[in-house]
Length: 175
Image (tube, rainbow, N blue to C red; front, side, top):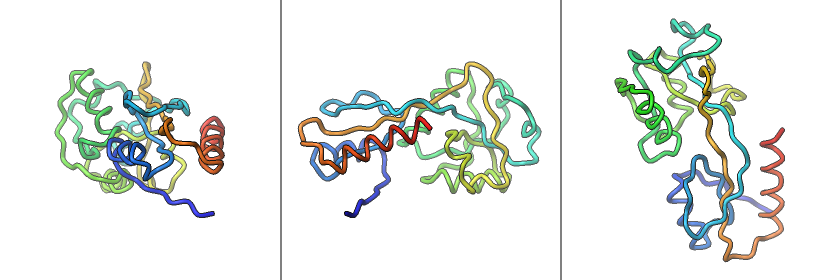
C-alpha cells in the first residue's frame, strides 16, 4: 500500500477533502470548516526561535513585550501558523518589522540562524535538525499553543488505512 503526502494551506486541502481527492488532513489552527469532521490531536506550545547569539537566546522564557524591536520572519499570510502569530502580535500590541515572508518554516528557520530576524515555531520543530544555529525559547505564561486537528469528510466512508492512520496520528501526538 502506498500513501501520498501533500502539503498546502488548510483551505486548499479542505477543498480536496470535500471533493474526495484526499482522505485525511492534519491541520493546525483550523477553524470550524463546514461539512468536515474534526478530531483534535492535542495542543502544542509555540516557541520563539532566535539566532544562537541573540540577546534573548539564553533566557528561560520570553515576554511578548521584549520583542517590540525585533525583525520578524513569517510564513505567508494564508498559512495557519502565520495567521496565529499575527493575531498574537496584535493581541500583545506589537507591530514588528516584517522582513521576510516564506512558504516553508524550514527555510525561515535557516534565515533565523543566519541572523536575519526571529520567528515563532511549533514545539515539534525542536526535534529536527532544521533549528541548528538557533535557540528556541519558551514564552512566559500564558504560553501560546496551537491545536493540531485531523480533518475528514464524514460523507465518505473511512478506509481501513485512513482509520489506522488516524489512530496512529493520535497516539503519536500523545507520546
